[in-house]
Length: 469
Image (cartoon, rainbow, N blue to C red; front, side):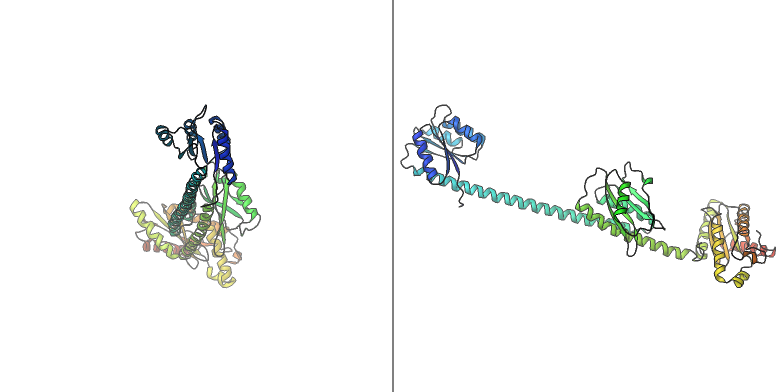
């Protein structure tokens, strides 16, 4: 057993007996105090707790049984031993039922009996204290184990949720879709907090808010940022500017950093201005890396797709794309019974220009013509480089009459444009000739209307060039 010793209160109206017991207990090292009545004992118990109370059964005022009852009502763990010179079976049974630990009968043949009973009580209290401590330790370990189990479960759930979100996001190859999925997924992963994604424009001097969710009253249109010079990392100044844009809450930012490029910034907000948890920070860090991979994949896919469908010199669609789109447009036109027109054109005397000024200058002319044409067509029109100096435009829902009107506008714009060395061309300017056809008026099928437009272009050349036929 340990060296712990209980504190003791002796209650007896006989001062001689009370003093003898107190002196004995103090001599052997117990903290002990006496009280001459039940009232005095209760007053002492209001200011200090005692582990053991010895009390006489018969006392003026509050007797031993009443004191026992009040003590147990106040603190059931206090051990009470009754001492009496008038013991009866009834009073003994009643005392035990009320919670008395034991009883002693006066006069004591050997006062050492008190020490013996105290030792038994001490052993009992020590065992109970040890049991309580073991139970508390066990409960604490169980709490720690339960907390660890909860953390493991939460970590497992987070990993599963992250994996599912990353898998879905990485499956997208459309940039706008990747942007939108990024904020939706990270918002859900961190507890449905507001999320924002900024991406740099081509100049890398402006951060554009590409997607957001759960912004509440924040004005998304005011969240773009401009910088005096190119930004290459998330600096303190950049964070301060971002924070200034989201004053309504606390913000946590993470760069969207690819292998060789800093694409932008992913952020989560807490509109109630609460601090972010370690878990939320870890999720944002992990997910931001996946967003960077998804952005890189989507951009690479877009570049590959562009190379497959675009002419590298002019940026217009290439012949392969033209042939694919034309078939689709003609099928749609046949189904919904609307016209589709083609404008076929090429540069007059282009070989002469190339031979005189070189192919590099010829490329400049082709690029500038492409820009002039693109500036005049509708969003629904498809402008393609057919090959060499030949171009073709697909015009859905357009008759030959309207196509001719557009061709005349383009012809005049090109003729009036100041190309390098254009005044040295045979006609004193760089000009183009046009051939137009319409489906179904001029025939059915891609080959037929392309040939009709090509034939019309040939006639325009015969008519003296720089005209629409």
